[in-house]
Length: 292
Ligand SMILES: Nc1ncnc2c1ncn2[C@@H]1O[C@H](COP(=O)(O)OP(=O)(O)OP(=O)(O)O)[C@@H](O)[C@H]1O
Ligand SMILES: [Mg+2]
Picture (cartoon, protein in one colour):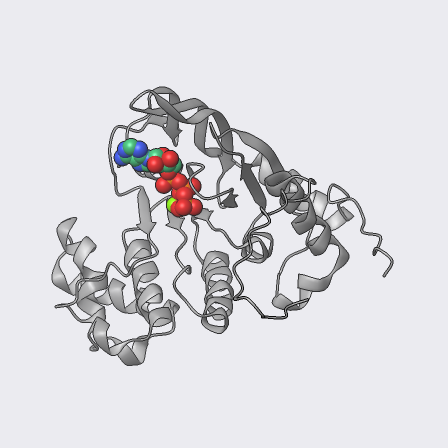
């Protein structure tokens, strides 16, 4: 079969180029300069530099163990950096803060609280009265489409619904940056697809910048303005890709040439072009089996 000719992933339509030009005019909200992280003399992240503009949606991809979670945890203030600089809104990060919200893969809701109480929790900890916390929580629950479930407990919800509550809970604290570490990794493909659409809808309505870690390249290309491709050992930025797929996005775009060209480029960066090494020739079949 002949190879399909793909356009260059760097080719942008005038509307996509105009969108990137506009994004670059927005203030830098997250500024990472020459960040290095060492665990017991092992360098996990080396010389990472990245400037993220307000309301950008950035995806981070790379092989398992390359340091994606470490990077996001450093931005969250849950892990320290070894050298370099990390600024949020121009201020150095020295620990967790309400300007950064986090959504993980595991469901982190409080099982003993209802949906509404889970979303109210951070607001009340921040000192809001229960009347204000309740009315704000209701708005966020409505935004993620779960108004009918505000009195339900987490165990009464599906995995996708729990993650929507987790997103509502993180957004209720009005973070400047939403940090998401493989938030849909445990969901089945259909639910995952719905969650991607929900996230894009929410992001269109809320002034929030998103840093989203994923293993799923379709998810990265579907969601991101830019994709940070990390290599391993130690992890460096291999390339920062401006996704040439126009917005608004939908799964129908997954077979467009610009979508496929972007995905192909990431695969090339992560896996290289070489063939996998041949497997050793070990005979595991029983004598007499015919597998030829
Ligand atoms: N607290 C820690 N102490 C020591 N080493 C750590 C610690 N946290 C992470 N590491 C190491 O840093 C490297 C990167 O880990 P990290 O979890 O960031 O990778 P990842 O890209 O998120 O992987 P995955 O895709 O599997 O989630 C790994 O080699 C890991 O063993
Ligand atoms: Mg990880």
